[in-house]
Length: 137
Image (cartoon, rainbow, N blue to C red; front, side):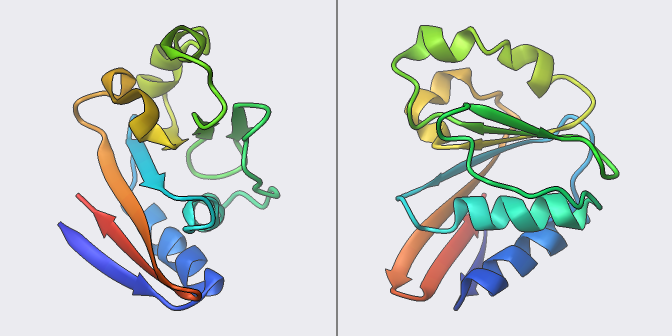
C-alpha cells in the first residue's frame, strides 16, 4: 500500500501522469472517495500521461467516456448515478475490463461485486480544503 499526499489539484493531476507510466492493457483502476476528493483530477493526469490530449470530464451523467488518443485507450466510468447493479451490468463492463485498454471506475465501491479481483483500488481522502491523501492498494 502506498500513500501520496496532494496539496493541490495540479499535484493530483501530476500524480495521475506518473501513475500512467506503469499501467498496461487490461488494468482496472477502482477509485473511491467523496465528491471533490480528486478522482476526476487523477483521471485527467492519467489520460494525459498516456499521451491523449482530450478534455477529461467526469462521466457522471453519460456513465462512460472513452479516450483513445494515447498509448492505451482509457475507459472512464462513473458509478455514482447508476440506480442498481443491473444498470451497471448493461454497460457491458466485461468487454471493457478484459479488453485492450485501461478501465477507470469512479465510485467503484458502489458495486464492488462487479469489479475484477485483480483491480487496483485507489482511495481519495480529503484531509483539508487543499490536501488529499491518495492511497493505492
